[in-house]
Length: 199
DNA sequence: TTCGGGATCGTCT
DNA sequence: GACGATCCCGAAC
Image (tube, rainbow, N blue to C red; front, side):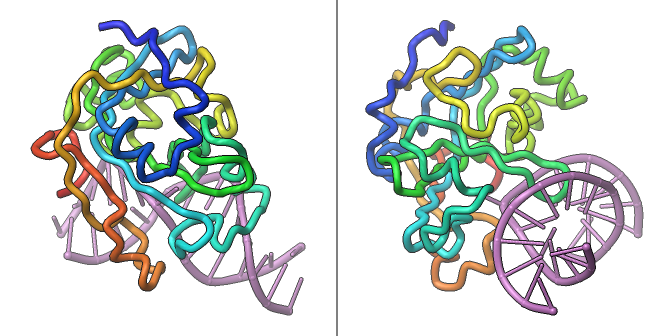
């Protein structure tokens, strides 16, 4: 398998829901970090909308040092750090000045599996990338090194999907504080794919 | 400057 | 199913 094709800048300026469902789900997230190529099929993701969504870090369109990258033009990485130990990778969507992001929650490992096993310290394929913190570890993504970088470069990119997946919509995970937005069906995953964090 | 809590995960019961 | 780990952010003082 070859991951040389990339989604281009204009695609990332689409509406976040369209980008997530029509382009990102089923595509391959790829990294070449420390000389190692790793890649996985995107099987699960969540949409966050800065203007209205109480679960979004940038709600209500609040620009802070942490959320600044979300306000940039689509096509860069928003990577943040939580719980003192985990990084989380998001794709920034939409035009500059809007704060929309797509959290990648789960991958199906495709390439560089040995590297992923070393980084994750486990031989269990099913446990390499099935969670937002896990996949950052497996692909070598950190806030310090990758927040704000372009997804059309050579370190981190997304290779387009070749088939159209069947999609299931579900509530997002871990956002009980988000009041009426916690029940929105803004999490999307590939039907019957075993590499999702939760059903 | 302090302080509360987090878009999680691994370990333990 | 519960809990602790452990850094950073953002709000309040």
